[in-house]
Length: 127
Image (cartoon, rainbow, N blue to C red; front, side, top):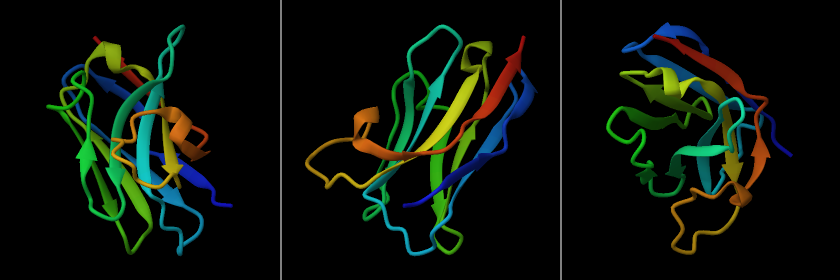
């Protein structure tokens, strides 16, 4: 088992930036991929970013890809989500997730591939 703990959310004005952190409780944890998802009020959970652990390859949906970066610190077993040029529609609870599903050509954008989830952290973007 591994526990994921997100931090870094908050209130920011439109056009601003935030960096979220996700720390894994187990230092020896090597997932197949790490991902970030979000859920806005009244909406379905949405994929935001993924990072394949073995290669470092990243993937983003069109809605965020020009202003979002997922990265990692192997020494700290931490994954980050940097979001810039934030918009009110980015307001949501953001969740970090870890997948142990073996790579089979996926970009790890499907939430069903993730077995471990953090508790979520709120980002609110004011206009």
